[in-house]
Image 1 (cartoon, rainbow, N blue to C red):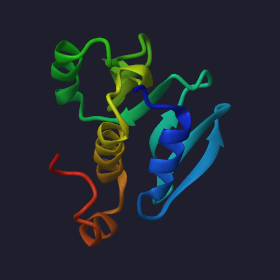
Image 2 (spheres, one colour):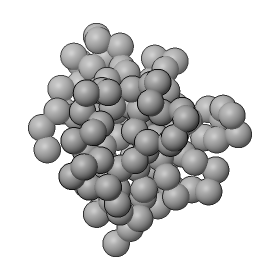
Image 3 (cartoon, rainbow, N blue to C red):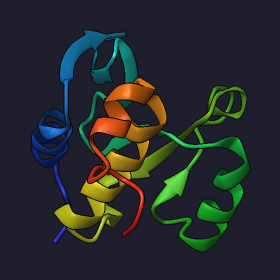
Length: 119
């Protein structure tokens, strides 16, 4: 079963101190004022934080799921995720939690060890 934009919204907003704000015509999900996920305008793709050094391995392992938006993502620590290729809300939750943990203020992340990390 493919995941949906509504799944993204539900999971992202369930993460500690997360909120939604429209930017560039797209819903973005933030913690501590920083974006940890954005939903593409067609509701089929999300962008999430991802260390640059990890992106190539993710894309090589699952190119149907992960990709970079040419001309943009090369410069930032982000990766794109096709929602149709995400197995279920458990996997989506892990992807969003990892991104949240990369962006969340240290104290907030430390106060919520249950978010992100081990899958």
